[in-house]
Image (cartoon, rainbow, N blue to C red; front, side, top):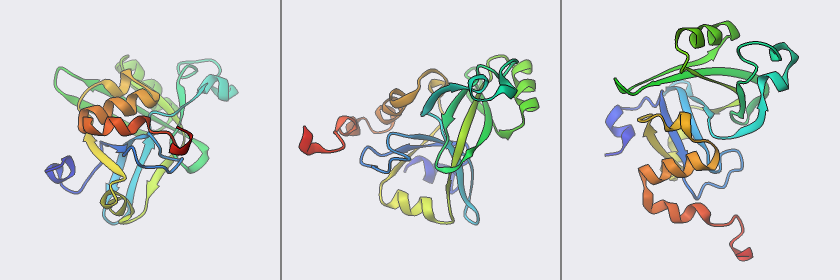
Length: 187
């Protein structure tokens, strides 16, 4: 029984980890944090391991000074990449709870940091979305692995290292595929 079967059909609050064979450039080696999932509306989330190398303060004069100036920006997905979306989360290991706030305002992000300084805020350019039944179809094609957010590693590791760590925890036998070149003939 996989994680989805254990939790039912709703993937909200879980992670989608791209299978090593997924070649779509939007999602290759991606870890997606699912914020909403329903059979009627589809699935919504953000890629959490693709930093663009800029902060909110560098991207916009509106954030140049203040609490959110150093918030890193990530490529959240291929939908509406001209918009910035804020999300915040906090891992509470002592009780095993992962709290997530998605699509929040600048004021809400500041409030969450003030209440709990360990809260991690990230900005995302765009988001990832799947229409009704689309993600289930991709799962049937083995494009995605599903995992609960079960440890604080999403706050500690980034980029392809996060993706590799997630793969190694879920299906370590797939790690050998993680270093296959895009064009094996160049090997």
